[in-house]
Figure 1 (tube, rainbow, N blue to C red):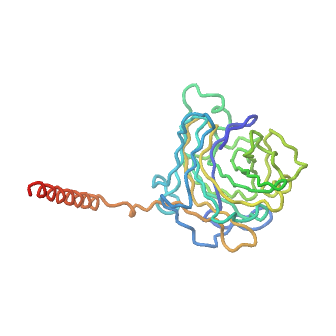
Figure 2 (cartoon, helix red, strand yellow):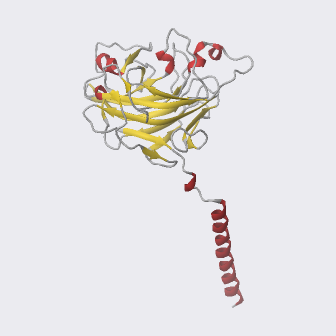
Length: 308
């Protein structure tokens, strides 16, 4: 995630409707499993790593990969890490195949599973790590939103983090355990790509005055306060964000997103790692032996040509 002023350090991102069923949103609709999930193996072109850093910033030390380290559903999950640099960024991103999956106002299910590895404070930690915020950092999920303002397309992100749904309370994250998270009725903050004004700039609702102060709303209230009725979701990102002052290690799985008036989920992806897709050691040895044989035969032919 991007860093920003006047707000607490950002932790991590992440994602959408999980394989577990039956969590209700405020309006009574349900996040239910209606489809067989897509199995996303390493190298699947639907998802791609996004390791951007601040312009002029240091080398990014974030990582994001599908691994077998900590399986959730199946044999794998998405593994995330940052080194402790404020500029680290480790996200996995998926874009809609067409222009968009659906309208922001029609989202009726967005959930994902996340896991945070236990963290030990270093000696003489910075204030940001000793504050209550460090206990509540979770993987982060971003919805990529495209709207039209004054005839021009405007892109922004609606960002979920646990901290902004626990304001005023100390509710430490339970580490070393998987969590199913239904974001549908939770709060999001808004990142606007047009500059360093993170919340209100670029809104179709002209009454929502530009401000550098971070504000949080549910998805429905963001539609009321900022976006037009035609604002659409064209992508999703999950991962580990920047502006977190300590090392972070976590996992994400079972990302799903659904819209009213549509059959099935727009996104229902299970990150998995199939070890059978990797050649067995014996196969590798036979393959290597074959290469040696081919190389040897070629060498013999060259020597014969020289001798002739």
